[in-house]
Image (cartoon, rainbow, N blue to C red; front, side):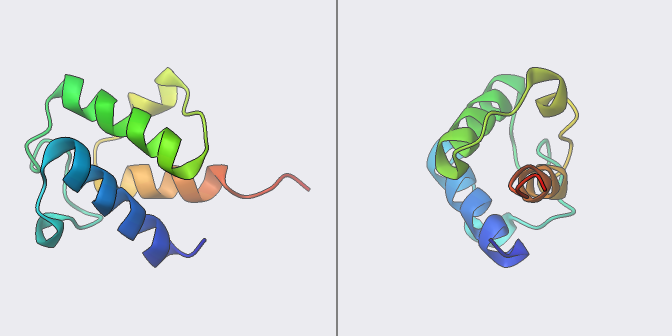
Length: 82
């Protein structure tokens, strides 16, 4: 999955779960700037797990500050082990 596809997927999740306008989503935007409190951020992580078919450990999820942090994690996690 490309970076753009991952970002688009997260944009869809943010819109569905937190009613974030797609035009507001950018990698450098913090989750707080998008209006997410800690509970909503957790809901976004759970929805992202479902959308991308991954399990995100709580300690990793706690480190997500920006949209880019979440996208980067999803891209790294989706790389198959060699």
